[in-house]
Amino acid sequence: MGLDIPMKITSAMDKNTITGRKVIRQAFTKETVCRINTDSQTQNVRQNTSGTVSRQPAQQNMQRNPVPQPVQQTRPVNTAPVLPSLPASSTLLRRGQKFTIADKSGAVPQSLKLVLDWQVINPQCDLDASAFLLRENDKVPAEEWFVFYGQPSSPDYSIQYSGNTGTGASMLINLNQISSQIQKIAFAVTIYEAIQQRLHFGMVQNVSARIFDQMKNIELARMELTDCTAGVTALVIGELYRYKGVWKFNAVGSGVARDLAGFCAMYGIEAG
Image 1 (cartoon, one colour):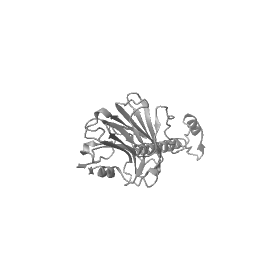
Image 2 (image 1 turned 90 degrees about the vertical axis):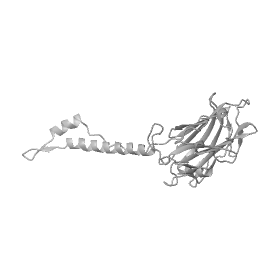
Image 3 (image 1 turned 30 degrees about the horizontal axis):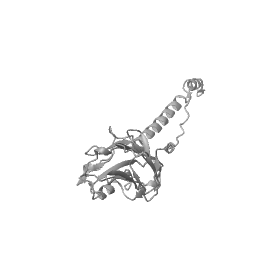
Image 4 (image 1 turned 180 degrees about the vertical axis):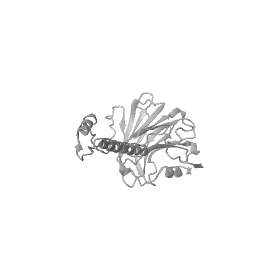
C-alpha cells in the first residue's frame, strides 16, 4: 500500500505554521523601517533661496509627528507549558511501565483523551502527533488506519486527531468503538521534515503525555519523555493494547532516529 504524506499548507485544519510566523515578522520589520524613513524625510530642514536654513517648519512637524524610535527586535520567549501538579487520581508512569486503563476505583472509562505538551527551542521545529492502529502482526490493515494531520480520523472513528496548538496536540480515543481487528495503537510525536531540514529533539524540551478519562475529565496517568537529544528525530510515546479483554498502556517513552515516513514503513505503509 502507498500513501502520499501531504505537505503542510495553510488550510482550515492547518495551524499557524513557523513559516507564516516568519513572514509576519519580516513584514512587520519592513513596515516599521519604511515608516521611520518616511517620517524622517518629512522632518528634514529645507534651505531657502538665500542659503539659510528654515528650521521652524521642521520643529512644528516634529511636534505633530514625533520621530518614532526604532523597534527593538527581540526573539519571542517560548515558555515551557506549565503542567498542573499531579492530581491524586493520576499515576506517574516510568518508561516501560504498564498501566491498566482504569481509574483508581477500578472503573473503566469509555473514552480517553491523550494530551501531549512540549516546548520548542528552535522555532523551525514543527511537531505533530500520529497514531497507527495495528493488527496482531504489528501492521496497519490499510493506510487508512494511520491517523495524523493529513488524515485526522480512523475508519472506525475510534481515533480523532484534534489538531496542534503549537505547544502540544491531543487525540480522542473511543475504546468501545475500536475495531475488533485492532490489537494495538502506537502513538508517536515527530518533527515535520526533520531529516530533510536536519532538525532533532535536542531542539525540543519538556515533552510530556497525559491520559484522561474524557467523559469525566479526570487525569488517569502521566509520563515525561526525556529522550530529547540530538540523535533523536521522533519520540515513541506509548502503545495502547488489548490484554485478556482489557486495555492497557505501555509507556514506551523512547526516542528513535526516524521520521514520519520511517514510521509508516515500519508499520506497513509505503509513503509516496
